[in-house]
Length: 162
Image 1 (cartoon, rainbow, N blue to C red):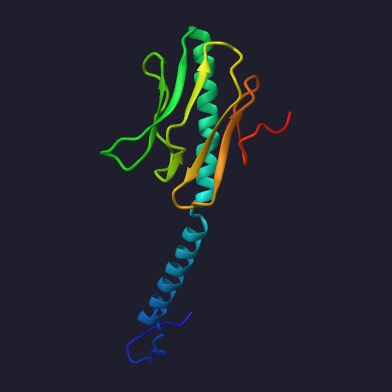
Image 2 (image 1 turned 180 degrees about the horizontal axis):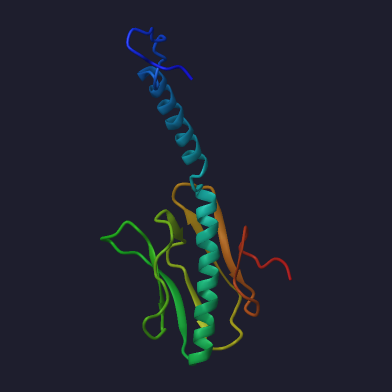
């Protein structure tokens, strides 16, 4: 280990730290990587529509079960409010607090004037409702039941499967 004393020569100073240019390059690379990751994690319109349709199927089954348990007629229908650009829905006939009345995504819509009778009888007629996306106009999912089995999400309006 060298000893520094008066009169001894100092070795040339070693560079300490990073230059401004090196820091700017690193920050730019991090910004680009963050942008790529955030764009790849964005929720697509198809997955948002699928999620809303599956949630509606579960809500309809819940409303159906509550209608049978309470012995009350329950009807699900869409609601168009002039003051709001977002469509909502309501479960008429359920006691408070009821069930959720909004879509998870503001771009999801059901066919206007849609209504589904959920009970109180354990057997209901076959029913279907079209679920659409405002940002993916060609994409339609159907929430259907044959009247006996639970509601489920399909690509067509006719009950398919076991």
